[in-house]
Image (cartoon, rainbow, N blue to C red):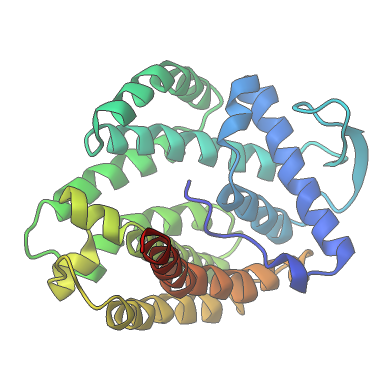
Length: 302
């Protein structure tokens, strides 16, 4: 996945950050146990968030034990004490999303990236076979259909922002819906997943804007606002921010209705401070950094 959904560390209590890291490390260990040591390399913040959300909805894993890190045996980490369905789900989410993201990148990348994908793909294929063996056919189908729908909408020259974001939004909606245990929570979690998927898709599109302009790759903001080289970066950043804020607002409204059984401070930090901070960084801070670096390089050349 993309890695945009992460906590704002300075705003977390130490005990909450330790709990977050424990789930992160537990998911790393679970990926290695279920899919092989190399699968730990696809660990992401987004999948960690899903694991914590699932645990909180189900009331799982509220205690931790210390053990050696599988990647760095000299380091000690906290791990969940009990077997966890939520960790299994998050690992499956990691594998399915990674496998189909590779397919997408293979058709939309330069020579060297395609070569790297060709080397990685046999590992991803093995992980996918295990995914199906473990009974996660629904995850595989959700991401397979998402990629097909995404290709179809992005092939439409008139495709707008909402239409472009819908396949990703729908996929995350179905993934979140799996956690529900009653009709009310189905509606709430579907809505939450939908707007989380939309936010991730749009923030990724904003992050890739300049690269897509150079390569000619599809970007919903380029399509919607007819952006061309030499565009007013500050003005476009404001336009994108307004659109992404709508998804973030709906995401937060849905989150407030979820019945949680733990980790509320961690989740609230992520869906408020974490998302806001990431959005600010992608849309404004990175632009300022590039302008500053460009100015410094110009001064040095003079």
